Image (tube, rainbow, N blue to C red):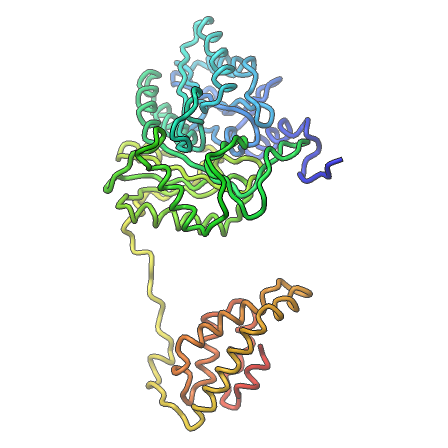
Length: 465
């Protein structure tokens, strides 16, 4: 029997319990009895306006219940994990919104067969009952040069569409206008994903196999096959490859971009990347797009449309103008939407200069002392010894700590080696302490920094290492 690897009560109840958890934590949400439907708890506020309904299989949280709120979705329908919700629940949500006095209902779905069939059937049934309903299908996947008959898949770009349509609905625009404007915006969105691991539906084996050290480019959010497998590269290399592929004009699925275009960037965690990795990828994507002459107006970085515990990320790029930015910046109470900066990000000076050290301002540049040659040889020997013992020190530290002792001292060694001459003066003990304080985190630098007496020696200083 496969050991339990997910913190759940049971595979059968996880979707219902997850929805109850989302609703319990957000006063603006409620559940529709008898259905897996999360709705705004203030449906009366929608009277006379267009209501927005989305949804799909569970396992992509915070999509879609996390985007229910004023200024975004009016309701979201959840299916079982990676399974489209039944048309009966979609219809129940539509009729509930209609009975609340809305002027019409817009369905926003991802381009997957199950969603198109089930939401489409509910749409026809609602129209037969006199409800004005329209549907927008998001197909933003840039993976395949020649998409299948089913077309491009719907991915994280759907979240941006929720926001645009939600802002328009909040302003009171009619259904047909919202459909027209959102459909136009969808054509300017492209997404591509990459994964370093599979994911697994609760109670099931992983959706696919991926050997350690490999990654799959262009896979779907349910683990559908991508376009190729490669060895894992650096963040910069992977991001460049993804953006090159997304904008390759020879592909039928490419996103046309040219220098001078203004874009919004969304870096989406597929589930299990650390926040540290996400920040590194965000930097790489930002730099890559700026290097192509694009103006980056907004950046979203976080978990927006996940694939359970998949270790990977997707990049979404959207061409924007000032009107689209205005709609993206509009307020929303949806718990899953990030608090974005409303200032254009490209061209900013992100660096501030630190204050000068008091010693730099008050003490003239120190000259080399009589023991400079001895100090140089001692420092060089200490540096060589620490580097050669890096892995041994890490191993010793793993027995009682976080296993970084050798790596931490290596940082100080590199800082020292960059300019040993700067240490060869009568204040060498203070300069060495300063190098450690600038290059070494944790308590190791503190031990040395607190011992800058003139009686210190290289060997007594080394004893603190």
